[in-house]
Structures are given as C-alpha cells and as structure tokens.
Length: 101
Image (cartoon, rainbow, N blue to C red; front, side, top):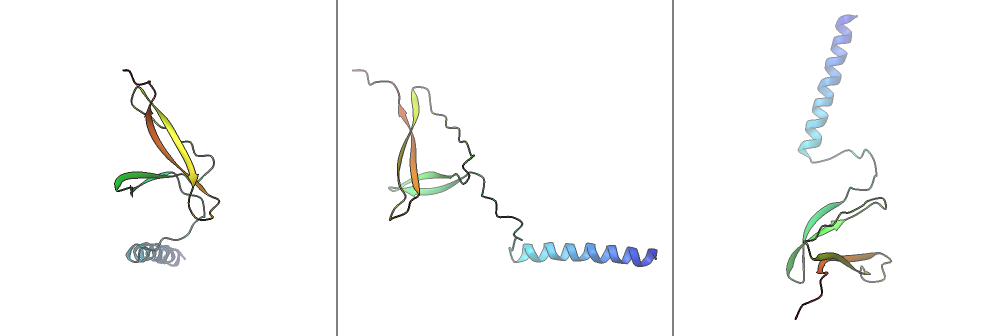
C-alpha cells in the first residue's frame, strides 16, 4: 500500500511539473478568475510626445497624484471617441500661483 501511495504522489508531482512547463512554453496562462486588473501605467505617444497612460479598471481604485510645489493637479475630461459612452481624462500639473509681472 505504501509503494502504491508513493507512486501516486510521484505521478501527481510529475504531472503538475509538466503542466507548468507546458503552460510556460506556450505562454498560456490558465484563467483562474475574471477580476479587473489593478491600475497600471503604460507608455504611449500623445501629440508626438511620450506620455504614460494610467488604466484604472475598478471603481474602488484611488490614485495619488503629486505635483511639484506651486503646482496642483488638473484634469480635463472628454469622451473617448466615436459614440462611446466611456470617458477619459488628461491629468496635468498646472501652476497654482498667479503669474507675477
């Protein structure tokens, strides 16, 4: 009985190892859930300039924005394009102090 039990565990371990190797070789990842992704920054180009696009996918996500002293965050919201009901915003740090002559 003990030999059969140890052979069974060896077969299970070997199968699991082969499964991991096959998934890695073909870059296949098993779908464990359909949860929204965490916020992430993706490099992109806007008007010929490099920018970072922040993808926020959950309504409970909070994003902290820090600007240099004398500047404050400003966001401009616009439709994403076409007839899409989704919106997007451009976040920039703008001068919070009035220009001095």
